[in-house]
Amino acid sequence: MVSKSASVKMASDNEASSEGQFNLEGILCELGSFGKYQLLLLFLLAFRDSFLAMCNFNYVFTAAQVNQRCYVPECESLDPQFNASWAPYVLNTSEICRRQVRHDGPLTIFENNTTIFRIDDGDCSPERYLDNETMRCEKIVYENYDSIVAEFDLGCEPWKRTMIGTVHNFGLVFSFLILGFISDRYGRKVIIVCTPLVVGVAGLIKSFSVNYWMLLVFEFLETALGYGNASLVLSLESVSQKRRVVFSCMSDILSSLGSAFFGLIAWKIPYWRDMMRAIYAPLLVVVFYIFLVDEGVRWLLAHNKKDEAVRVLNKVAKINNITLSKKAKEMLTKISDERDKTDQEKQNPVQTAHLLSALRSKKILARVALIAASFFCGMFVNYGTIINSISISGNKYLNFSALLLVSIPTRIITAITLTRFGRKAPICVAYTMCGIFFIMSAFVPKSIWWASTLFYVIGKMCSSYGLFSLTVLALEVFPTTSRNTLTNTANTIGRLGAVLAPQAPLLAQYMPGLPSISFGIVAFGPAILAMMLPEPGHADLPEDIKDAERLGNEGLGNNEQPSLESEGGRRDEKQKPAQQDVESAR
Image 1: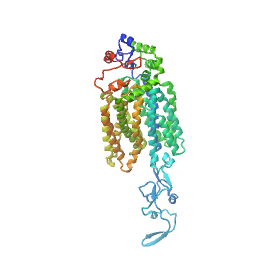
Image 2: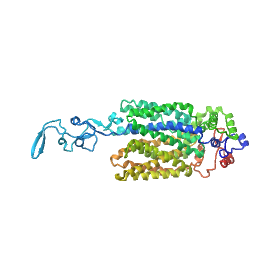
Image 3: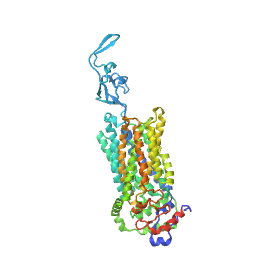
Image 4: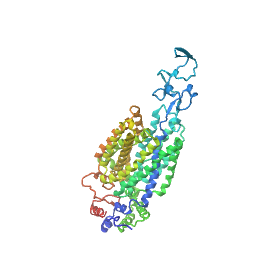
């Protein structure tokens, strides 16, 4: 049975019968946010997102730099080991792909004023490598062959190694734009089920690459046709306004916990082909989500699929063992009876009209631009710090896992602060702290390396906090009918920052702490831009363009609880007295 605290006072009987109004927020409050249905959804999304995150960062280890040295024919027979005894004088140069020139022919050596002649041309003695004349290596020897750098001999072409991460993130530019439109037009479930299958198949084919260029092609295809943020969208739309941040944070905590195992998997399965198969194959299991995951109720109502929306709501009530109030049952019955077949047949043109209306709004376009710029800075910092994590002191596998695990306490802080302080202020504070800590980590003396690592980790926590909060804010300021499309449009432009991120570690060639300094400077960008965005923290999710444009305007307070009409989910200003009753009952 429904407790008094969970029950919500609906509109009056006369209003409901005459105007057919439907209050989704009230029904979602009755159904609860953490029942059996929602917990099952959390674990299903966490499994999917954990392995997608592993695949998304696979190049961090598959294209990792490997210690290397030149192959020296005249010395290999003397000591063929990687750290050979002759290496200090034969390879005495700061350039990895060059070595000292060997002087052939008779060599004059003076000992105790006595001249000694050596004629052996195959000699590897130090005396034959005395000057600073160098030559390019004809062949490279690697410490191990676990990475594609060694297997495809990319040691002297570092741009090819970093290009893999750049192409990977460039593919995401197309992915988020295309899949955002598909998600808004055909539903969240299509993306949740199909993209992991595409990523899994492309990744398995990639693991059989015969050369560098084949791997690069499938790296792009994997990201251009997979990924997307449909899980976060579904999380936000599945629960009531008061619980959407907490629910989304729990989903992200579980996926972060799962993805952190990637560091251990890479440690225990270091060979890149085997490691890729271990993380890509489990994604094929997601095909069964067709039967396990339901479409988002908000999307169904926004597209006039009322019968399906009622079925999902009744299913949630049954699994959670919730008895809906009499008023809620009447609403579900009424909305099911008023199904409009004509609207269902025209839903595709309606969706196109919604998107065009959004693009004609100056406020919406301004938000897309501001959020895109914020995403650009945030993604450059977030992805760059993860990629650069294997270069900081300590075990690179544990460092990688640690940086993913810091998302767990970060999300707990996120759930508390975003719910209490809104969105804009926490984002500004987080990115300001992020910039300060990254810059500080670059100037800490090497003798206290632990302090540098600590500052780096704190900076990464602030970066993770800021990027997640930006994503939540973006999803909350756009209407349901084009929420994923507009968010992913901004995300797509922002992905250009992620495209540049794999190149950031190359800055260390000029100064050891320069990558961290660059992350710190760029982090101040979102702190400034967030102040220009509306504050959506205590408002309901906007259903149409007018609702979205009103966000941040004076007069749209916390007490306004709009309801969805049965004729297409539009707001009705006449419902304000009933809306106030709903809030007072809560």
